[in-house]
Figure 1 (tube, rainbow, N blue to C red):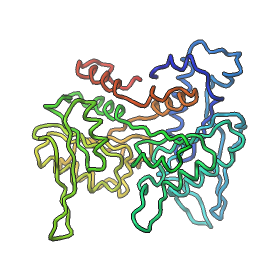
Figure 2 (figure 1 turned 90 degrees about the vertical axis):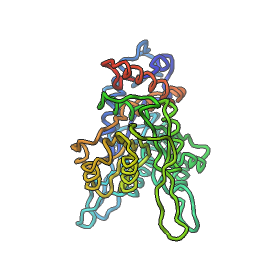
Figure 3 (figure 1 turned 180 degrees about the vertical axis):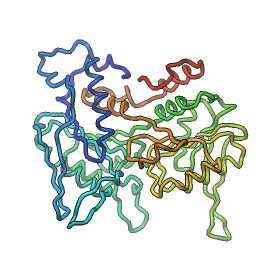
Figure 4 (figure 1 turned 90 degrees about the horizontal axis):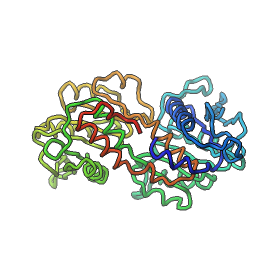
Amino acid sequence: MPNLHELEAAIPVAPLKLVVMDSAVNLGENVNNHLVGFRKSVKNIAKNNPAFEGYLSDNYILDSTCYRFGSGEGKALLSESIRGKDLFILTDVCNHSISYKINGYTNYKSPDDHYQDLKRVIAAANGKAHRVNVIIPFLYEGRQHKRNGHESLDCAQAIEELSKMGISNLITFDAHDPSIQNAAPLCGFDNFTPPYQFISALLGADDSLLIDREHLVVVSPNENAIDRAVYFANVLEVNTGTFYNRFASHSASTTHEFLGDNVDGKDVIIINDIITTGKSMIEKARRLKEMNAKRVFIFCTFGLFTEGLARFDEAYEQCCFDRIITTNLTYRIPELKSRPYYIEADMSKFLASIIDFMNHDSSMANVYTPTDKIHRILNRYNNREDDFAINE
């Protein structure tokens, strides 16, 4: 764990507890295992000091359940005392595999269902927990972050609602527009990104990469995501480019135009926050191959694949791209892991470190900026050392 010495000199805000919603069980269990390991490795704990009550544990997950009645109504039940606890609630609003019965029919939870369950847990905890922190890796309604004409402003409304319910901090990843935090300026809002885990996963799967300006380019799939690509390119010390939509004046059609460094004979990384249907991403990967890119790697924080994998299977067979890397922060269809082009970037250790530092009220600078970590892993990789995989 990075900067462990920072925690050895810090006192936790309150005893730590995790509420892992049914939508995030696998991720939550991995996070819990890392937290257990982190804290067992901390030295000089004053075991008799009340400030460290419950600090060492084999399990930080709270016994909790969200029930559904036959009518479809629900309730949250916390089966342990949470009085005085620093509570972290983890949910995945994009997990569409959770079902329940309503009037005898099977219904699958939508993002709205998961959000309502989250509010039920907050309502069950408020007034008892020392502090309530919410972890929503895929920010609920994050793509509906601004209003155009007469339409709803769902993401801002949700953040404002959670703030009014009394949460202290909201933790998310790769928010579509981080400025949405202005909807609740008095609520803590932390937005993290996974570039370190992306590059670690790729380097761990391919030992033939050359990370320099002559051999690699980082590309944004659209002009709205250019900041993400520019940061990643700067850290890797390579050039960047972007696609933009050109509208034909004589028709309603658009074309994807590329603006940036020459990709001829180079590996290309396309980095974005989300894959939904994947149609646009594949078109841009195909365009890069037509421009004679050597290999195309797609990095996406959230791989939703809302129309299945057939489109990606076909594009892979046509050599439109070489690898897809997504995180495990949200539910992925089971068959994805069997695809030869798929690589998972495990975020559980990173998320556990975020929780641990926040529980100590330590500076989030310890986990926010991965630049130095990326440089270290690149040095180990370029020197072809055996331990370049994630170990921080």
